[in-house]
Image 1 (cartoon, rainbow, N blue to C red):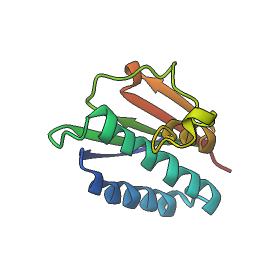
Image 2 (cartoon, rainbow, N blue to C red; image 1 turned 180 degrees about the vertical axis):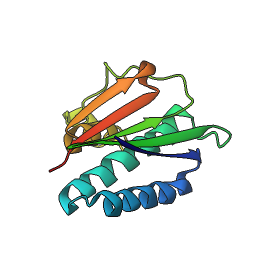
Image 3 (cartoon, rainbow, N blue to C red; image 1 turned 90 degrees about the vertical axis):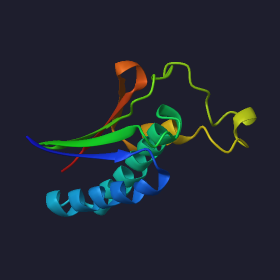
Length: 133
């Protein structure tokens, strides 16, 4: 089992570091372009949520991203220092009253682009799983 980890302060510009982390993982583990695209969008969305909502944009708080590779499965763990959230009662972004809203699609995207999504520690950690090969 292989593992890599990065920790960044909660500043939106640091998403570039997350993108580089994912680019490096693509090269290192020879991920195909389809799964790479899904990982890039889902993971950066999770990190954005952790920065904006979890840590409320507080640059003194960090977001950590861990990658765990186990044979045909790659897992990403995004953790913030916030209080967590009620992930069981999320508004559906596809309902007519929510279509025009500028936010609220992040978790919807994560669930559609990942093979599995799990929230841990009261929503402070999101685990995104992708099957490879």
